[in-house]
Amino acid sequence: MKVLFLSFLILFKTSAILSAQSLSKAYFAGGCFWCMEESFEQLKGVNEVISGYSGGITANPTYREVTYGDTGHFEVVEIIYDKEIISYDELLKNFWINIDPFDAYGQFCDKGYSYRSVAFYQNKKQKELIEKDVKKFEKKFKKKVVTYIKKFEIFYKAEDKHQDYYQEYFVNYLKYKKACRREKILSNIWGT
Image 1: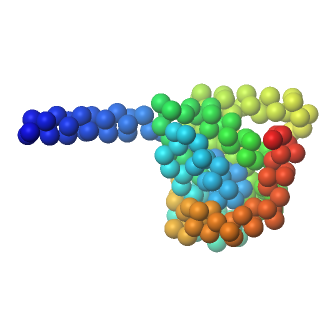
Image 2: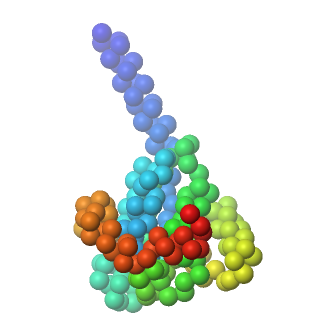
Image 3: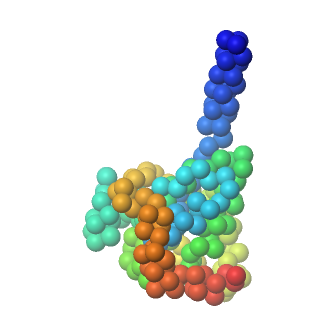
């Protein structure tokens, strides 16, 4: 029995190590981080989505500072995903169909610098994938894509009340999403 238990323990630890090795992170800003969190959490292979801030200069910013101050940060989601199940390219595709890449003032009813769309890259390959998509969309839509392409530096987790907001306050979230006409605008751009 002891040998069986030890074998199980070794197998469990090996499995956990292999699983941890296949985990990776990606970062996107698409306006309200609540909406971005919802869109990514529905994807198979995404383990967790965390709302936060990135792209700016202020260390440990608050929501108020990011929204009303001059921190240079955007509302960003950190996506922890299993690269054995879902690729960065698939995450990038999901990002595009959940934003308006032609809005230079924010996203949907959220306007201001912190609500602009951003695709963050962590390596040359990711940057090339983003740039390739931008060229493809500009050619297809005959419009300039204004989504920023930025090198990822650091991520600051948002306050607890912003984590899983769309689940915790589902009715309020749906009202907000509908009032912003998010789904209608996305449908007009990308189709159903």
